[in-house]
Figure 1 (cartoon, rainbow, N blue to C red):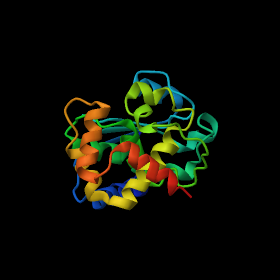
Figure 2: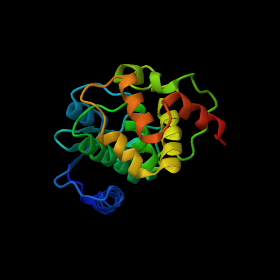
Figure 3: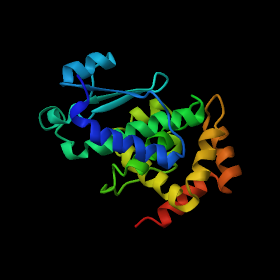
Length: 210
């Protein structure tokens, strides 16, 4: 369907994310599915109830479920959160551009999108796994925990790093990620840029958690 009825929200989100990163990516396509069946057809797979947005990073295409359908087909989301979802998916496109398609840990990939869009601003979580970065890094590990706090934990930790070290340092982490991801390899990059390894940063984060 056309995106005309959401043009204002989408254009505002595009400008905000481009301004935040300091550059603009042209020709990002946004497709809004009229219902869950159409959304799953676009993605080529079945989706969970909470899934309302997804991106094809290399093709710069964002797929969204029409927020008018959320009350019925995605009741865990509120239609007024739609602008936050658009920002979230745009951040994924920009992050992939910064990394030049190289894999970054999922906690950073999803956490940064949540932090910039402020999509999980009102989260309330009380349990954190020990060494959670090592358990939220690969797509396999991430998918094992999407229903048990992965998104809010990633958001809170990345938001902490963002506030403490600034977007410039976070961009460096993304840009210097190696072509092949490993926890130890990325941990070395984190230490070189932030001066602490992930275990130390997790400890600092938990000690400063409000």
